[in-house]
Structure formats: structure tokens, C-alpha cells
Length: 49
View 1 (spheres, rainbow, N blue to C red):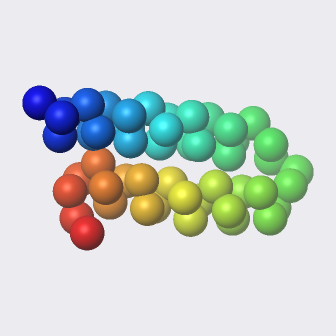
View 2 (cartoon, rainbow, N blue to C red; view 1 turned 180 degrees about the vertical axis):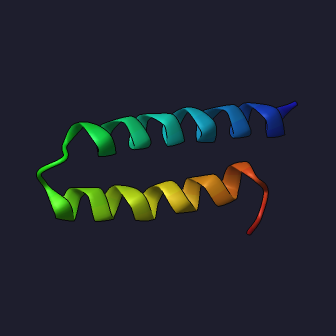
């Protein structure tokens, strides 16, 4: 049960990072940071460590 809560939180954070990444289109460094964070969160949602 706790695993699914963790996955839901990670998926929610992934969505927030991706949305914020596409909203700030002019700041390239912000997009790079958000992409790195998105990759890490995606791997956690897919249970790849």
C-alpha cells in the first residue's frame, strides 16, 4: 500500500516538473534542470533504480 502512495507522489511531482518545464520556454538552464529531475522521477515511477 505504501508503495502505491510513493508512486502516486512521484508521478504527481513528475507531472508538475514537466508542466513547469514547458511553461518557462525562454530559460534554457531551467529546462535542463527540470529535464534531469524529470528523468530521475520517471525512473522512480517505473521502479528502475
